[in-house]
Image (cartoon, rainbow, N blue to C red; front, side, top):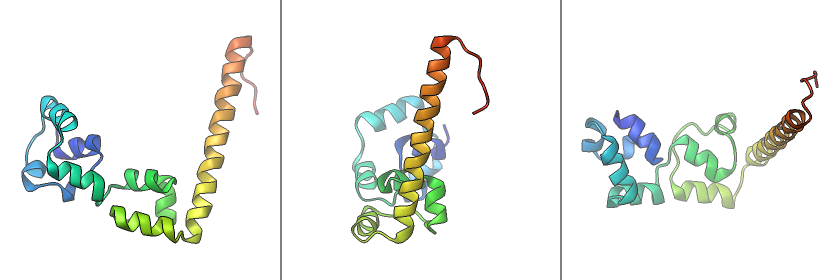
Length: 126
């Protein structure tokens, strides 16, 4: 697989990986080996960053779109994320609230659809 795909599966920021990783091709066996027994560079990247947007979003408990709305467009290190959590900007509170509302709505729709499936009713406009 391409290095970008492997980096995504490993949860690391590709430009921060070693050159040989970026320039090579990663087989599924190699990916499995990296996941099962990560080399020091992978351990360090996962611990300290820089982290890709999905990881930054997860650590801040916001969506990737919320990061963009908050002006975070670059990868962040673990220290930068910790600083943001210690001194949260106003947008972070707003984006967390938005994500919480989205998740509540997703749960509501899932429960509604499950109930409809149990009762055998047809979908109606909500």
